[in-house]
Image (cartoon, rainbow, N blue to C red; front, side, top):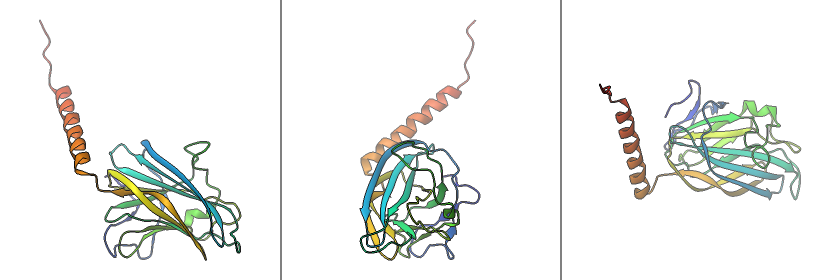
Length: 212
């Protein structure tokens, strides 16, 4: 796994969280292939929101998890800024937290950033190592703002269901994607694929003799 020189790398394991939290750097690298996308709409006591999630497989074969929060209005009781979001089930995976404000999926996908203050955002991990979080920093989401897209580049090869949380004075939870360890059959297929790719590369590098 190749990481940018100044990436906000959040190490795995209990207690391995940045102190202070790591500043999130601009996205660097390829997007790869889209594997899954979801969008959840909900209303809490102090805000209404849409939470977008996606999983991409990049050129290294590892998985990137994309998350974005859109504040769509006030809640059932009052209206407060959204301060942060979390994504669970990251276990002992390495996470390189990055941000990307572009509308890379077009209509129906992630929105272009509408909250410049997210550039002060930071990433952290819960003490038990399972939950990743992003704090929006100096400018929380107010009105109908949407956050930039946050990318958790991991060393995982497979994904499963996970949970997200959008947090202010109240909280909203829902389903999203999270990294997981591949099943044995999947590992066997991946190893076989790598072996075939290596064999093809070796054959292509063999010297060839010209026929007289």
